[in-house]
Image (cartoon, rainbow, N blue to C red; front, top):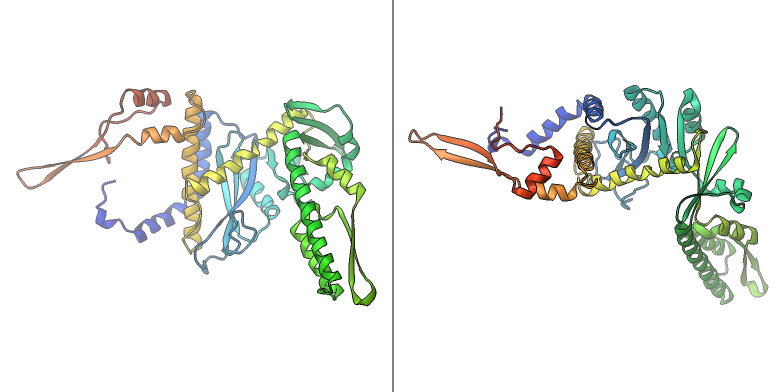
Length: 417
């Protein structure tokens, strides 16, 4: 960019970040307009999800840096949460940074307010996972004609136990079926996956075995007189159930004092709970206020939420969103903005690949384009001055075809003007 290398150093680059973060709202608005022009993107379906990224260091100057539920398994570090909104094509259009200890459901109102100010309220369908559900959020979503498709806690399947046993399921593809149930003006989409059933069954049986093994261990210790205090025994059983929550509700456990001061544990698996567990294995439920779509249409719309989850994987790994080494709040937010903009470029290239019939995974294209190199040619003159020309290596035949499909022109020379 014509800047002397000696004048480029960390603090100067960081001050550049300070200027960039001031333009965040304008950048997001410009991206929305430009992406709409390039790819005719519609903003009728908005997918929202939350992740976290952790800090190296104390981050004492950042009030948003707090300890909370870590998606990176780094509960020992402070973190911030990031709420990201993407279109149904997976194109990111906006995000917000929240305190690291803020529950997902507490971010929904703020995100909806900001996105609606930017894109309007009309004809928006919000898609979120079950972690966003709260009584207050449901009232917000139902207000002012908003439409939504939201994941629902598995515990609510109990309400539709009889429907799970009946037929008339709609096949989406081999191994996945859906069924619509209406209740108090809402539509509940029951989903049943054969692959997920096998997985759920294996997980549940493993937790049952762990609980039984733990109870047998404590039973032997009690009979041998190594555990004589009933309160201590019950606390150990409580911790055992907490570690294996997936199956803890299936057990009925009692502790009794017997002769000679010894303790005895009695347990059994609740028959009705086990039967319900077997019925619901592989099942999950969505809820919506959209009444004129089929079960398959609603399920396919919701499953696009995986695009938001995939966004976080790419941002964290390829684009180095984690860990964050900045300590000041505005520098942290600027770092996240750079990662967000980089991901927009990634998805732009992805859309270009898709439009050119090259799939929608740009990783291979980026590897091929790395062969295009900018070289500085320095020509000394008799007067002692230097003429510096920035030349771009020209692509070979195969790369030229790729660039032509993507409608990308490679200049022969690079100009700073």
